[in-house]
Image (cartoon, rainbow, N blue to C red; front, side, top):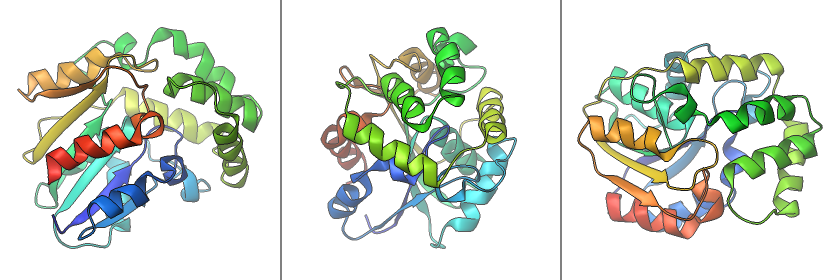
Amino acid sequence: MAAEIILLRGLFRGSYHWADFPERLQRFFSDSVVRCIDIPGNGYLSSEVSPKTISGMVESVRLQRKSKGKTHILAVSMGGMIGLKWAELYPEEIESVICVNTSAKGFSPFYERLLPRNYFRIVRALFSSPFNRETIIYQMVSNQAFNRGTVNEWANYSQNYPMSHSNFWRQLIAASRFVISRPKCDLHFVTSLNDRLVNFEATKAMANSWGIPVVVNEIDGHDIALDNPEWLLKIVGSIWL
């Protein structure tokens, strides 16, 4: 599959949080170009203002891509919303989208799209020191034992590329209001049965509505690329090869 593969992250996450997964994916698809893109307000674009809508995020991502051919997207959480909306608005540009633990308004209730036990945790994280904030986030997105090394790396990164409180709220509101009609491209959904951040039923509800089978991970957390990158690579390979 010779093409451009774009990786998109979710709320208050940047390209850095993929760790070495992009390099692994690049080796898997050696004929393609794998690229990570951040939205305004996250990662290397942390100093910019986040769009208030998922559609606005799409426009920023489109401007950053380099290929003029059709694109394949692998996206986590809110990144999946961006990928789906991109495919809906510009069907001639997107060949396929793989959504990992993604949800949308109208398919499932708000308390499934973001589990209530995380509401206070997210607010507490927003007003915590970088290390404490990343510790809270790690505990929400990972089902692995606490990894101080990873959290330290995230904390150092967040100090260099800090996310503003206003951008956090803008992204959260954009995600909560996200609505989508079925894009015409090839679609795939992956969900974590034991996701601690989003109920796996939220992803299944959207896929089932569109008649698309769901790949279920029974062990890992919201961030499968963090918890089990080899498993995710195998799934992506089975879809795109």
